[in-house]
Image 1: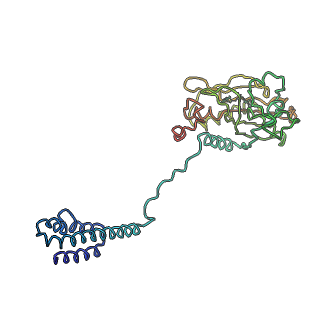
Image 2: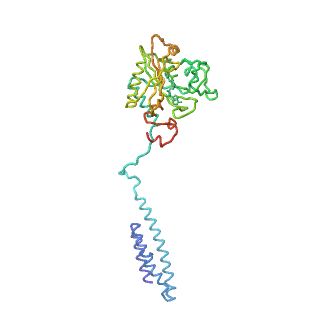
Image 3: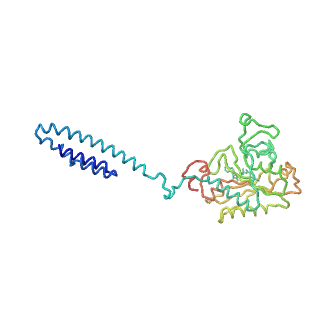
Length: 334
Ligand code: FA5
């Protein structure tokens, strides 16, 4: 019994002295471990005479229970203490890099193109995506019965889609090209000027590797005295040099758009095939007449190019649909 009392005394002392979980564990092993002091006493009970066993047995069991409780309590105490000691914020640690995303490749390229034209003294203007028939077609010399209207498969808006439908300027639609901004700009500004108009356009047509139903165009318009197609060639070739930063193979092809005369198209060699990237030409006199410019006094060139196709060529992207797929494996490469 004396041995048990001594053991209790020293165990209590060690428990209260333990300053860390490791120290506490050592003490626990010392008394309650497989070869612990109290364990040995409990194990030797069976060798004692019955009378003594009856006295010492319960005492030893009681002490075991007591000590177990004390060890547990102290262990909880030490754990909370260690946890509270941990600094919440270590300002000396190097910071974690936060993922903040980045611009979509098309936004990046659009900005690049804006900057190139700004450096050539062009201004950047924007216009409405919901247009009317007059600006999208009529004023651009594409009257209602003109077969060229078929070239632009149009998303027409119903009255219920768009309440402020007016009759003066015809039915409302999603603009099929950025050219209506030629009209809007000339209606409100006097020449000379040079502008580009980046913006989204919509076409009701089947998609494939080089066609989308919504895509971006960059319209260009330069009006002044004695402007000729040579000015267009110079500006566009200068743009190619700055944009691609390398030699590219391109060609001009005669073409037809009702709002230019003469009209051309520009193709760039991409993966051994010609990819059409823009329509262009000298502003048609009918267009100048619809904005009340004197066609004998002013000349101009206009162009409309595809942002996606330029980006495809620059970054060797095979399929235009990837830009709108939302596939992060693609987007994160830019
Ligand atoms: C036009 O939209 C004319 N407004 C361009 C223009 C402006 C001509 C000023 C003359 C003067 P077009 O429909 O060809 O033309 O489209 C212009 C360019 O957009 C094409 O050369 C082509 O590169 C691109 N494009 C046309 N349709 C799609 C489409 N569905 N998806 C992606 N790009 C397209």
